[in-house]
Length: 311
Image (cartoon, rainbow, N blue to C red; front, top):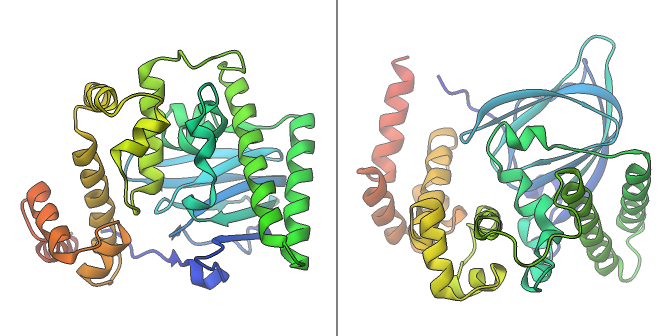
């Protein structure tokens, strides 16, 4: 039976839609272990010190457990369930950066030869297991020093909240994402010498990552074509070749998969869940849901509940 897990809401952390960002430090030991949980925001975790096992569960790759230690950087996507497991003598100190996907400035993706600058945000978190976990970012001494300096600036601005702190946090945060993407690119062997002539699939992965991040927003093919540095026609053809689906169907299917998980685990209304996953019109959400699943959202929820009660 699927257990009902906590969903950490943005409002609990005081995350304002006009400035969707929060940062905090946390220390965990075996007495303060978190319950397996999900959140409606993206979580970037920097491990300051200690060790633990990171347990993460997703509809895409199931459940994984892997060791984390000082210098590790993790990204937990919206809706993924995770926690930390610690042995009797283990202690884990982390910095949590919580943010909405739109907080990342994606303008870098539009410039020829610069699209790799956000790969740690748009590509790595959506790799299939085991590739995603084989390429978790582990910073060396120099890299950790650079990242800790940026995080320190963000913490100081967030705590003091002086005039202009939001603008400075945005600047530092985007520098953080770009630097992490540089380290990630170098760690997987792409390096700075790869140019705009990368394979079409590489660009499609970025487009898919972008859609995965922004599925709740209005997504236009013209914008995706700019991200892929190609024409709309070329993107449409390449996307179908790579995924077997049109862009529109891919977006709809992704939204419906997200909606199915929410319908089973949480008690929000059908209209509320439709809005959360990107459907502005409840009737259209129900229509697309039925087309892709063969039943309405209400019928899917009832059938899932009956199946669970019978287990």
